[in-house]
Image (cartoon, rainbow, N blue to C red):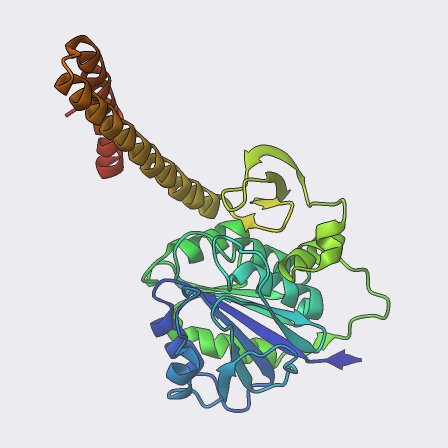
Length: 336
């Protein structure tokens, strides 16, 4: 016996509006699958993506709402600042921990579709920076689903498609003009009915529990992987490291998760924050020393005033180094 029940999960980031418009606009009105879309957007933004896609699509397009049923022939878009997950026959919309510095993020959606639909899952990775989606396509493939990736050669931002290809050999690497027809063909293929009592992937299920911000995951003792000796850039907690084939990932105790490029990007941002904090502290201390020097000089205490001025000059030299690093990233050049 066979079932369809396909769910198509599409992830895009930088350059994604144009790519999504071309793909969704070419999907047929009788598509026998639900399409779920994650586009990286700022949490404070107003998402106009359903309106933009609705003008070109033959399918109805709307923001996903918590509890929406998975109905064929619908396109549901992740709302700002919320992950979208598939739970059996419905959609969850949750404010779980950021993954790869994003919420909504692509990996949680892909993992959830892999768990819920197995071989009836289709993951599609379009243009974008960094590597969100790489771990997700590996999860979809591990459960028998199909992976479609935009050809990096034509992607406006090729990093995300390139990372997905490196993580898992896709079933299809294609230009945008062909992706809609590939999706249509894949979701019309019949897949074997999943047997009763099918074994659940415990690691995937645990990671989905973190994404859904379930208390059982937070209160439990298990975190996927092994301690990495690294700290979480988001909360400062310890990161655990997992390796699924060629896919390296990190997750902290409360659920923040990172692919390698996303972790490096987040660490870089935290280093810059630390440098700005150091510069502020140096400038404030120099200001206090100069004020004290001036006051002591006015009282005729020239030796003490000079010591304070000398200390302030040392701080100014240190502050110049920090300013140079902030401006250029150069820590080797001479102090200006």
